[in-house]
Image 1 (cartoon, one colour):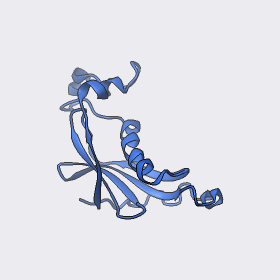
Image 2: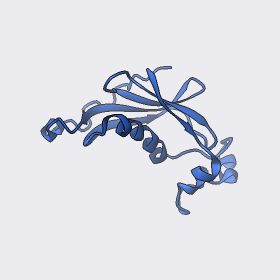
Image 3: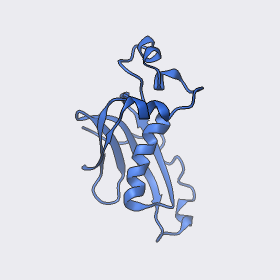
Length: 135
């Protein structure tokens, strides 16, 4: 896997991402501590934004089907790497200190030079399978 970016989180910007009615473990240090966490954690949509952003920056897909899985929490003050397969990616991972936090497994990705018909019938085709991101 190759590095395609770095994410330097900071509490102020991470907290600003969430609306006031979101789960407080994402933006309130006391709520996170009460839940047994060392700091607030990023929500799934926030993590998806970083991983899909890496795909869009390089491939600009017009459509994509993927599975997103989470292994460990990403804290609001982490410094993480985004790793991807070489070539057209099958996986994009968010990694901290050499450990995978989340994996986006690409099932199908359509770019501008491919027909949309290629997307038919692919949603969920790999449901339940391992996404294979190992570090």
